[in-house]
Length: 493
Image 1 (tube, helix red, strand yellow):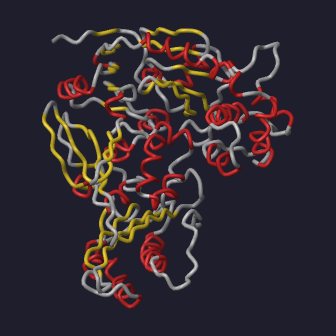
Image 2 (tube, one colour; image 1 turned 120 degrees about the horizontal axis):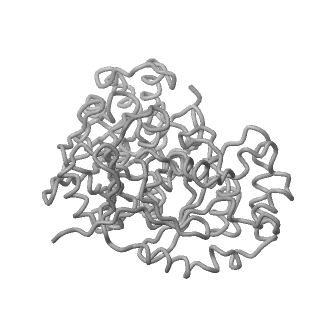
């Protein structure tokens, strides 16, 4: 059957529909808003998804429900917006009208100084307020992890977030009151067609379905796959790379499915960190703190589990934990699939076990058994929105005599790929879970890793941290009145 093709990108921008027939593969939403549409409230600060000055809301349908999320406009590509509703700070209030409750709260609590970062804070708070009108301080802080201010500090901004609902009712906000109408408009934009724009030199493709994506990639094995763009966006903004042809995936609902059975959790590759959070912390609460420290809210809303794996970064947040849990990935090429252990997917730096035309379709995470002890620790220069210097994940299974029946220990930041500490594991197996066994095993780290020195940490520091994390894991598994260490605290390098 011939796939029907459309040659335009269609989305809503504030209160208007936009249809674009000429879209560059590297055109970011930030440049489109500021240059093409003269919407200058959205600012460029870092151009790498860190500072949040470019924050806008993007609404999209999922299973018929319209949900708005804060995203970084600087690394989100215009082509990915098909079927979405983009909301910028200009939509909150008319030029001569009253301020929006979020804006009014920022003014009343003196939460802005130079004003450059303020629109980004407003949009992040707007997204939070719609979902949670009376958030706790902890929830506010989490929502603002991806927004940086160099002038005023955050106490006044937190007070502003707490004051919004005393100024306005969330139910009367246009994005809430008109949710059904907007959802209908977005549904009408979804025609089930494949989108193709440009020629081979600057081609952009949005497949019509998962099967269509498999066909497109099999025919274009060198195409750049873009899901959340939290990494590919930097290829463009920082390294000026030519990424065409590009295949976008964020619109494919089939790649955003989550299923749970007696064996474990299966996440389709396009599931974002935000979408995965609820099911992850329900079944694997040991991952809660790690999940809170993956980027900021905007990055968690955009970034995908499959993308984090397929990218193959040695300092990716999720692979060490998933390897320790015994996760596997299902790879697909055309109609053929194969499943491999996640640890074997990473071959060497920049190289994964993925054939031309093949893509990561899903990841399966087994549940822990009652005899398992599991924890993951992220060590970085700052607590929030930072890349790991070292990330260590530990799972040991104890037998009825308290001996180590099995051990899986994986690290990020210690090698060219996420990698298991095979010799440390071997040194632990068959021995009692004791302090003496731990001290005997730490000497095997030098056999497993030869870490690098870079601006995040020295090789000596990384090795010391890896050893101390094993000691920490052992201490935290003891029930002898030892005070447990707060895993969310970043360790300064």
